[in-house]
Length: 87
Length: 294
Image (cartoon, each protein chain N blue to C red):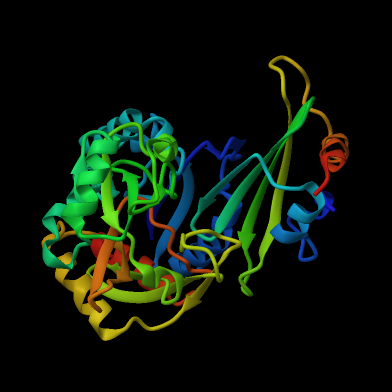
C-alpha cells in the first residue's frame, strides 16, 4: 500500500489510518499533513497532500531507524512492522 | 528575464528536501508559479533559505515560500534575511515585515476587526480564569503568541476545565481568545492579496464534529468568493498592516455577534492554496514582476 506513494492510486489518509491505526504524531501545514508512526525498530514518516477532490493522498513515505547509528530499514520492513500494530 | 530565488527549507517535518525540491504538498503550487513565471518574464529557482552564498548567485530577488523549518531556527532565519538584504538582494516579504508578523501581538494593531484577545506571559489557571471573565466567553482557546499549525492549542469550557487541561497549553507567552462557534459550520475564510490587489479566497470547512479548520484530512478546502463583510473586515485590517506587503493571507472567522473577525495575518510563508485556486499563481507572479520592473 505505502509503495504507491506519489501515484494517483496512492492510499488516502483514512485508508492508511484504518490499516496502521492512529499515528503517534500528526502535524499539519496548508493542505497537507505529516503522520509519524513509531515502532520498536523503525519510525515511519508519511507525508500527505490534498488532491483536487480534497482527498489527502499519500505523497511520500520515509522509513528511519529508531536508534542513532542504525541503518534505516527498507520501506517494506518498516511497513510490515507498522502493520503489526494494526488499526 | 528576472531571476528569483524561491526559498525553501532543507527539511520538511523531518524528511530531507532534496536540492531543487519543495515539500510534496507544495509541488502543485510551485509548478503553477514557475509556469506563470515563464509567461511574466520571471525565472524562479528553488534555493535553500540558509544558503550563505545566495546573495552572490545572481538573483534579482528572493521570495520566501516553503521555509517551514524556520521555526526550528528562527534567529538563523531572520539573520539570513538580514544578510541577503544587506548584500543588496531584495527579499519578499522584507525582513522587517517578517519580524512584524513573527509574533501574533500584531493583532493589537489591527483595530476592531481583530479578534478580541487576552495577552498573557504564561497560560496559568489564574490567567485563564480571568480571561473567561474579560472576554465574557463560554469557551476560550489558548494558543501560543509565536507558532503555527494549532501547536500547543487547547480549547476550554467555562466551569468545565481544570489546571490539568493546561498541560497542552503554550509553555511560553500565550494568547487567549473566545471560541467562535461558527468555525464548526461556517468554517474559516482565507483571503489573499498580491502586490496590494485582491487575488482569491478559500473557505476551510471542518467536517462535522471537528473544530480546527486547518486540519487537512478533516477539512474541506473550497475556492469560494468571500462574503462582502469578511472582505471589508480584512481590508480594514490590511490598512493597519505594513503597506508594502508583496503577499499576504488574512484569515477570518464569523464572530458570535455576526461580525467577521481577523484571527491571523500570514505575511511570512503563507500556504497559498493554489491547488484550489490556480488563477492566483499568475497574480502572485505578476506582483513580483511589477516590483522587479519586468
